[in-house]
Amino acid sequence: MATNENDGQCALVTGASGGLGEALARVLAANKFNLVLLARRRDKLQDLANELSAAHGVRTTIAPADLGEPGAAQAVFQAVNDAGTQVDLLVNNAGLLVEGQFNALDLDKQLQLLQVNIVAMTAMTHLFLAPMLARKRGRILNVASVASFMPVPNLAVYAASKAYVRSFSDALSQELGGSGVTVTTLCPGVTATDMVKGTELGKMPSMMIMDAKTVAEEGYRACMAGKPVHVAGLANELAVQWIKYQPSWLVRAVGGLLNQGREK
Image 1 (cartoon, rainbow, N blue to C red):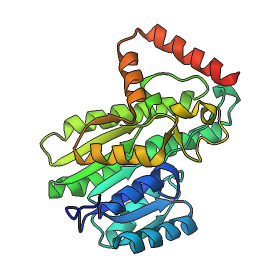
Image 2 (spheres, helix red, strand yellow; image 1 turned 180 degrees about the vertical axis):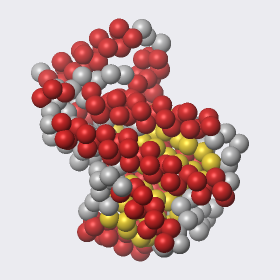
Image 3 (cartoon, rainbow, N blue to C red; image 1 turned 90 degrees about the vertical axis):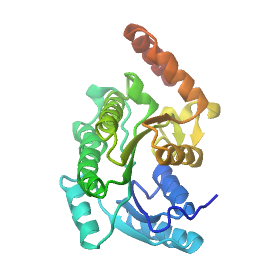
């Protein structure tokens, strides 16, 4: 249910043109956040911005940008500042996934993944955090993954990048204690988005795949509560708790078995 407590506040959502980013934008608009929508696809961003403005009476602007390009985060920050927009909630959702054996995958694609998942996310956080600290108020929601809790063969670079997101965000959450700024890490499992279509992840049993709206709603609630880490879905939370208390050799073995199961 929409409330009025967020009237006048603005959220910037990266990767907002589809999947979890679009779902997060919809949840934020329903809760009366004005929006800055960032992604590469200008047409899809504009259509979504128009729809959310009409449906919820919020102000929406678009920021077409490719976070895979060096310097993109700095350009976005400058453009937002030049427009006089104050970002109260930053959602670092944009991410890339490449699947396959590390040595067989194109190197440039894997380096671009690191640029988006790690470098751009870190830059966006650093740039938008400074004004939040000056105001002594703000929220940051960084999207990691259940894959961040274990090594995942055939998703080696992706899982490692999400481990960075989780570790970085968790540490930052502690650094910012008492500052008025909170950092929440959202860790979804496999989610029904275009990113996983056509991959082995998308072939998992439907009971193990969450819908983007549910994940977004859980992430929003966790962020507004200032929760440091939230694993979406009870089954995923139970799996993560199991992983935490197992020896590393067993976690690696389970990751290998799961990978073999996907390949069959």
